Length: 113
Image (cartoon, rainbow, N blue to C red; front, side, top):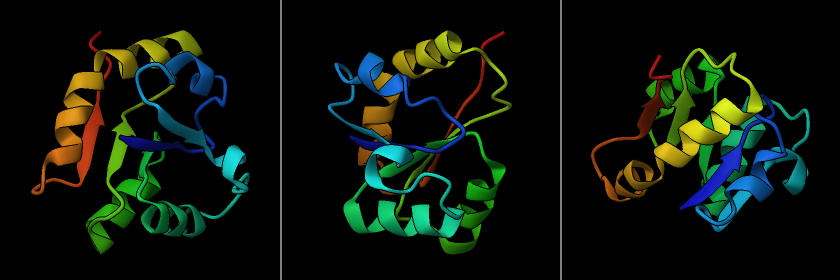
């Protein structure tokens, strides 16, 4: 699954998660640092990436425009880097299934605690 991490998530996640998600990039890696949400949305759509974010604006965009791109929303994400990394690791299998799901465009990750 091709994943694009939004600005609100640490670019340090990329090397930590490449073994699970071989096509993982941060917006800063693709020239979208501090870009408007619409520019990120358009890039992800054009390049076949799902957006990983904690930004509710992307949820609203997905409701308004549909998909692609698919959206992975980390809900209420005020967690330390390692917690976010663990949440994405634990969701890897479900994200693979989500990628193939033709009926859903938003996948929500909630902290189990």
